[in-house]
Length: 409
Image 1: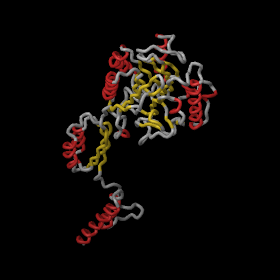
Image 2: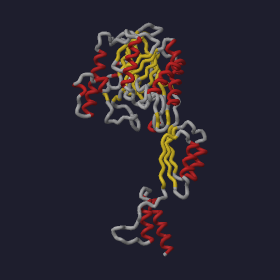
Image 3: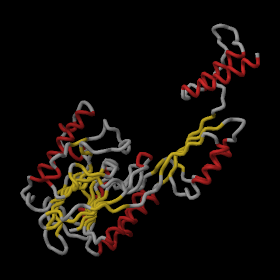
Image 4: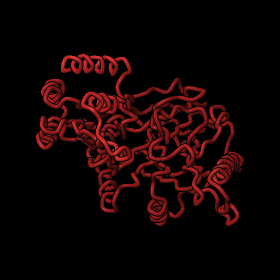
């Protein structure tokens, strides 16, 4: 059974003023191409299918796009297994699961072998089996959504906690208990091939510059040291930086696109793994996905920097850019600067500008009621304006100013 592992699609997302729909749909289409070219049996999406910023009409169009892109995959017997992440809207996903259950009310009981050729979404801890199309052997799939109170703390007492730390500790325990209960289920075969799909932060993972729209205090971190021994493959989502943990068959596939500036250096991809009747066949293989360039651009001297940027970035129409602009009033026309940069980087997602020629607060002291001398005023002004500069550079400029002031005397 050939399984393609991916995660963190965040469909319908935005970055600043830029709608990422087209970028993300192209990435999904590339995933579908990998499914066809690699003769994939199961596409496993380990959570965060949708963005919390997606509008209802956008979600409808996203599902319609899925139908177009994966119709051939499903019609030829492929199966899509998905689970909910921390950015997926719980109410929407639960409604979607309920609607799917109405369509197939006998499918999805714990440990049951489910039919191929359709999509399955797990909004709660789920245990199912799929039969290999060619070999006829079953593979067990354990699908573990991101641990939230509504998903994992079902009883009323479990929803009572006095602090975020206490809540996270309860969720860590509940996640471990749910996994333990599944592996203790009468239909779970400890000797049969088993694959885990989970959207969770495993201790020891490299999160890069930061987590994606969640703080480290809010996040739930599990230990997970036993997972490589319990499963033939662990398909993880939530951490956007691709990596393996402890063993090469326990992996974060990473997001399918660069979602913010913290991911500017990431090489995106999906992971292909093959499971046989006796377990994993060989090592997982990473298949690359092209990703949109994203980077900061700093403009310190518009008259010199803008002509240089035109030459350095002749094909930046699709790039995502964070602009930091400094200009001098009376020398630079801000409107012209912004217009020129907009032509070079039409997909800037954030920009900030600051006027660097302002004199700042008055140098006349109200307390003394008198003014400072010319030389003292100049020295104080330079000291204030150069406070963020390198000390050696600041001293050199002040030394030049002192020489000029001496000549004037």
